[in-house]
Image (cartoon, rainbow, N blue to C red; front, side):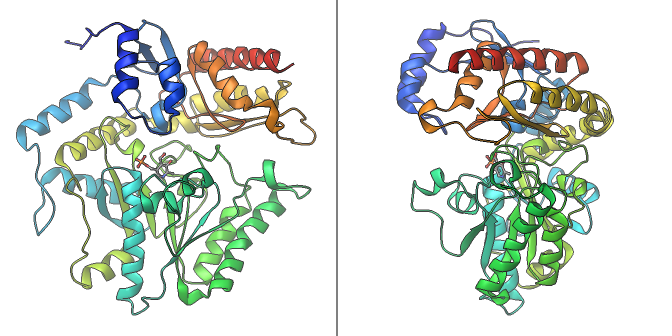
Length: 457
Ligand code: PLP
């Protein structure tokens, strides 16, 4: 096998990178000062950097490499499709085999009557599609004023204008004049940080009822949809109390509000079922998918749409929307191979009943560490809250600095990729993780936590 293994020395690459490459979500000055860690190869759950260090990737890249790295059959699927038909579009009454086969497969595995697929290149633009789709749907039903979309504070739905507006990240809204009109936000079901004296169940219900209050404030005739991640990922792996989703579902049904489940992270096995909606008994009208759809091997996203919305839109004439790469044949072929691997190797089962329970047991034990206020996990999505005061569930004082950032640095030095969101530490490993990988992960995480504790004492 030919690998691309020749590259300039690390320092030279870092200097070129800082000089010419603008990175997403990165402090440019810090990048120039420190230099990026340059990843050159990956296999299974392990990354290799330009210095030959081997790193356990407990984030599956950006929550996406569900089948693990280095799968030859994925490369072969791409090469086969490139030779056969490298590109054709799906506009203006044309189609092709990979787009048709993948749509059929997604309709088969998606819950309920989510039988129709509109392709995008990733999660952000799939959510842009959703905004236009739900507004167009209500207009086609004779209700053009029903166009507000309710989302949640601290949600993440992407980086495009609509995606970042749907998201509830204040740091993103502060750049570029967001949110765009007719997108509003309610509170998140983040009991640990915001639940006060309520029990998690009381708090979950209270936060769900903010949706009802918001619909009543705006008027049901103005609200098109509610969008949410089954488990908030980029917000810090916020696992909602069990009372939350049933109440949200009831409210959406009672008020004729479309429910969009953003499954970009939760989808394709991460929660222990194929979709997070199945783990929480949610019946969405639309699901946003990306990431695990191709395990990140190639960019692809989609909106999976229920019969009622898709049929109404189809009968309303042209939907004036689409991307050059909607249903890209190579991306669809790669996604099909990814779904084959996911099913044939029973990777969702590995999350539910293989490695998953062992990971959960070891992860929850981290709550005994003096720095950890809670250690929560569902499937292969886990988070730790770092705290100076466990009983009070207190955050660190601003002058202490971002302790999560310090902990993340120690993880990285110890060849473990974990992410931080403020003072929450996160994992979302590839679904191929084994029990011995878990042991390595936990051992490195504990070492990083110990070093962090020593730093702030
Ligand atoms: N929605 C969710 C829940 C996500 O986590 C992300 C990315 O992290 C997106 C949407 C955006 O997807 P993309 O980065 O592929 O545009």
